[in-house]
Amino acid sequence: MLMQDIRFEEGLNACMNCGVCTAICPAAEFYNYDPRQIVDIVQSGDNDEIEKLLKSEVIWYCGECMSCKTRCPRGNAPGLVIMALRGLSQDLGFFVESEKGRQQLAIKRTVGESILSTGYCVYIDMLTPPLHPEQGPNWEWVYENRKELVNRLGGNYKGSGPGILRKIPQESLDELKKIFEVTGALKRYEKIESSSMKKAEELNLQLDETNDNEYFRHIYKTNNGSHTKQ
Image (cartoon, rainbow, N blue to C red; front, side):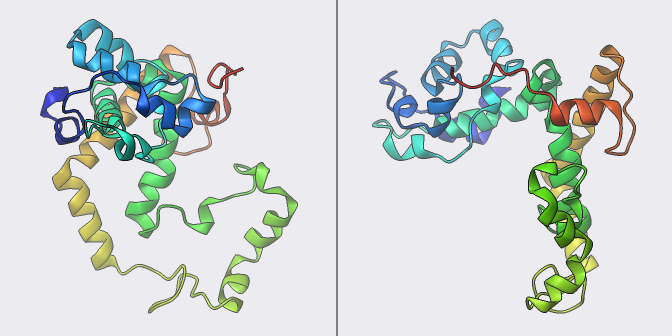
């Protein structure tokens, strides 16, 4: 299944395990993350070890900056391999077995659904003070006065025509949804939802269609402190 992913085919030619990707990787500097080891496991073809990867934290540490691609002497792109692993983990429902993996539901319900409903990855209406306390008291004022403030700064908050934060035409939103449907993204969304629901039941946490429930708050805020290097 992994070998059928074009990102895997394009990302892994012939790794000689030199470790340059790990040396240049920004994520490896801070996280318990080693792209060289991941590529080594994938090249081994060991299904048991690959399944462990798909259920692990490590495949979610990559920032997909592709620094690895620019430095690899063999032209490999471990970042693309990571993308393929992430997709497979989602499709098989293995992502819910790790703390970082479970956060895929939060990304899907915020950024993912925002793309389809507004045409923006992150829309200002999403950045509510209760979910983003790190923004501080100034942001609460900005959020409450966002329409007036955006328009005073030359934007076009939810307006028709050009301008920052303008309303995206329904025709464009329909086209976006069609792209998601044809590429299989909507099917993957469904898998993320169904796997998350099953995990929520296993953890005895309430999960509904909103972002105000026990499971969502749990995956959004929980950090066991084991991810970064000491």
